[in-house]
Image (cartoon, rainbow, N blue to C red; front, side, top):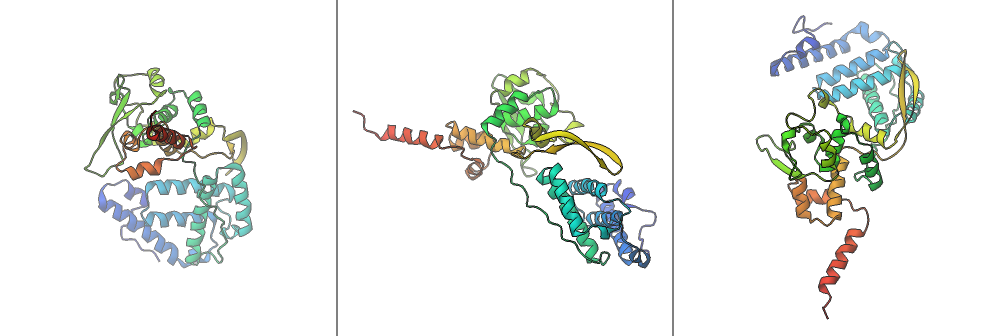
Length: 348
């Protein structure tokens, strides 16, 4: 059985067109491919291969019109899975025991988040084929829980990061801006040199986390030692980052590497080719937003009021600022106690 409302059109050709009509045509074409895949008696009688399993999962994702980021992450997971199971291997080879061995192997090489991402895609592909009758049995895929990220960077790790920064490198420059201003990563990526007031040591920019039609410009201070770092590459005009580079920054990987959370390099075979990678060493998984939480907490610890901190960080509500504050020790509480005792104690 072959259904084709748009002869000669493929997903790739439809994807290059613009407008909602083209997107609807592309989605219709993928649904047709799924219908053909389900209804073709000859295909259903043939043994399902690993390549066919992942191809069907890919078609299902495109038919559901998921985001481009979701598709890209799935394609990345497919490459890992095809490195373990050859494309023409039968899908029945993906047994529960084989998955457990694969999961243990992944955990020795990659971070918990990477392991989870690969296994989630594998589980979804197996479940889709099982529901449509292409897979006789559904093996259990043990997916680990999402690892909890640290929301406040320790003082020791901050000192290490500042000591290793080289702002002439784009990723290091981005990290310096996030650490030294507390701005969001996507706001820092679109900064221009004209936004910096060197005398007042402030940066003025338009916040990206706003509703369309309600832009908000925010002026935030540059905290030491950021101004001194930027003086080394100071320019007067143009963007801080090129348009090509800012499509992906890999800040989390850079931070992990600078803090020593990547082990010695090793080589292994992936799909018939030799690949060099580094083993993951357990440690705090600091994301870019952790530095925004950290700066908010350090401002409050240094004696700034919640209202002052709210204005400096660009929060709309004091509740947001409270959610960003993570107390590291009892020092602020002790300072407040001493201040209140001094005010309330009668003077002799």
